[in-house]
Length: 344
Ligand code: ADP
Ligand code: MG
Image (cartoon, rainbow, N blue to C red; front, side, top):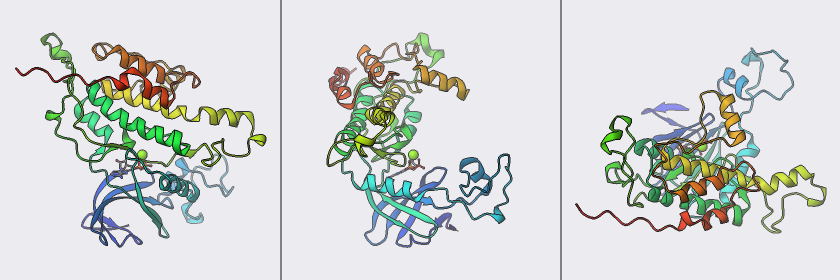
């Protein structure tokens, strides 16, 4: 990674001009780039094959060469080969799953290549960035705008679950991307943010309108998994020899995306997630029990239908939780957008 005009260049990525950094994770950087052979704008997800910082490696990924002893927290990197952080098989799985998808709500993989040090996933560019940032910017979405966004995500999940036998397993606002930069917040008909000081002044105005925020797509298949054999539409592996806990796991594996969808919908509607605590232990306990509330005053004006839908998603028993088809059949999903307000 050589810095040039503040943008890195990568051996093996010479055909692309890196324009700007769009996101980064622990092992990957995503750039807005131009494919210089076609002059098309793309996104390139660059995944490092090896970790560069040995101290990080010890925390995140322990070497599997057996050399490490318990309590040996200070491995000298000089004596070790750089441990592989990103398993080749995982990247290839991400690529293979993305290659097999073709849906307007799924980010498209254009090509895949690798060099000695990196993997490169060339992706359809999602210029509007993360849903996460739009929630932060707009505080929260009106019910109609939330529906406009969540239905697109749900169509993508339906395609993955029902047509591809794929569970995404990492649905969250950071992995839901807008195709274009949404229209300016002032023009988006969202409810005004709740302001405690102005509570008595009637500043908490229910939202109207919807749409106008464009296309949303599901990205990041790094944790995704195929759970059904596409040809036979049976669980993967030979059923006759599969242990009951695996069969059980497979049966409910899709429901993890439905829980996540419930968390995203909750967050869209009020601007904060259903489960939160500063202590990871308390948070884990809350999630395990499915303990959340429709906190007043933020939820006071949100429809009972929306709350009913969320209750069927944030439901601890996966057997009781809505499937994607039950989600799409719920009355909230087909509710007509409210008419615009009369001119004043
Ligand atoms: P990670 O596994 O590191 O989470 P992601 O695939 O989620 O990798 O990419 C990290 C971030 O990069 C995303 O949250 C998003 O902000 C940005 N990003 C990913 N793919 C694209 C894309 N196709 N277009 C624009 N930005 C993207
Ligand atoms: Mg991600």
